[in-house]
Amino acid sequence: MKHLLSLEKLPLADFETILRDAKVFKKERGAHKSQPLKGQTWAMMFSKSSTRTRVSFEVGISELGGNALFLNANDIQLGRGEPIQDTARVIGRMAHGAVIRTFAQSDVETFAEFSKIPTINALTDDEHPCQVLTDIFTFEEMRGSIVGKVVTFIGDGACNMPVSWIFAAAKLGFELRIAAPKEFQPSAEILKRAGGEIVVTEDLKSAASGADMLYTDVWVSMGKEAEAAERIKIFTGYQINASLVKLAKPGALVMHCLPAYRGKEIDAETFEANADTIFTQAENRLHVQKSILNWAVS
Ligand code: CP
Ligand code: NVA
Image 1 (cartoon, rainbow, N blue to C red):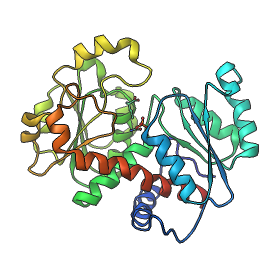
Image 2 (cartoon, rainbow, N blue to C red; image 1 turned 180 degrees about the horizontal axis):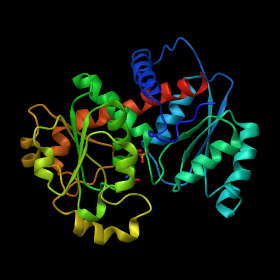
Image 3 (cartoon, rainbow, N blue to C red; image 1 turned 90 degrees about the horizontal axis):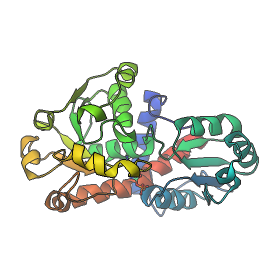
């Protein structure tokens, strides 16, 4: 039984399989040779908002022959306190796989354990594995192998995105630099667990210098809305803009997982100048997640 719960737990060979097959799914869209989800129903349990993840999984599941059943976690009994263990045992007896977006990482892990169906983490407070797999796919599609390259993440260094980047960097072998304010840097425990070549600094200029990719994410992640005013004060300055891009390698990619808040983590001009990369990155969620689904059932 395969689950994609975190990049920490994904073996390197599986990283490579998913990235390799995503190329085929992209190329053959509309004419897939196999329908690996034929006759299957996949439950999509979401406790947080989503545009890209929801649409790309619903379209992807259907294009692979399956049926996606979207469940807003607040509309099912889970939202009224039914335990995740019981929800998992019910869904596991009816659906063939699950895609879950929620708060606690332990909830996706418990769901996988109790449901006994392939389970995919579609974002938790701790990780966003589907996004980082897609980001790496997009980088490699545009620039070749990411191995040995320099990726600089700017902004909230303690949220789900940088954590998935940390585990990917350690596993695949590229340098990751995280420029974040002191109170929003990744924990020493995660850095130790991951290993690899990870630089953590408050100095975004040195972090951007010579980088092959500049990457950012929202300053206020889902669930942190109450801290918005405080965060905006602390993160001011941690922005991708033209002067920062000048410090990176000529031709460096600017990427954003989206949604983007112009004037905060990226300025409007830099966003538009890199919109083609950023929306290719968004589109690639579809192709990479098809590859993840196919991997999960094979
Ligand atoms: N990047 C991403 O996961 O977007 P959504 O929140 O819209 O799914
Ligand atoms: N860190 C962001 C990612 C959104 C795709 C969040 O959790 O809201």
